[in-house]
Length: 135
Image (tube, helix red, strand yellow):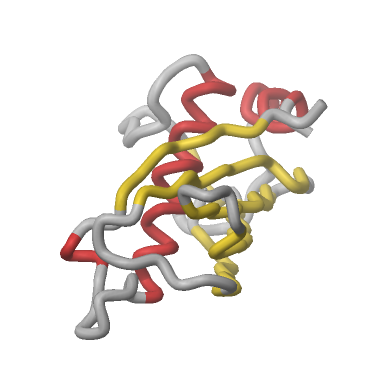
């Protein structure tokens, strides 16, 4: 059974445009909040900056499909899961559902492990095992 992390959130004023709907970039922030929760679940702690970590995971692909408008103060749930683990990459899938449970946004983020000089490198084994355990 895949591991799915859920974050209950609310559309903040700063996340909206002049129409009162979320600005498209807000979805990417919501995805990242849920991704960090998923990684806390998988790794047993916050995945924040670590000066001793010899790699990083920059995003190389981001996509979002908007199905239903979210507006200021709407409550919603953002779900994150690991979709694929490659040699040096991880893909995450996201679903945002409104308070009624209707799909509002779905998306995907791909991150690639790089060394400190920015060259692609294999995912470290402990991280790979944690990610694969969520599939």
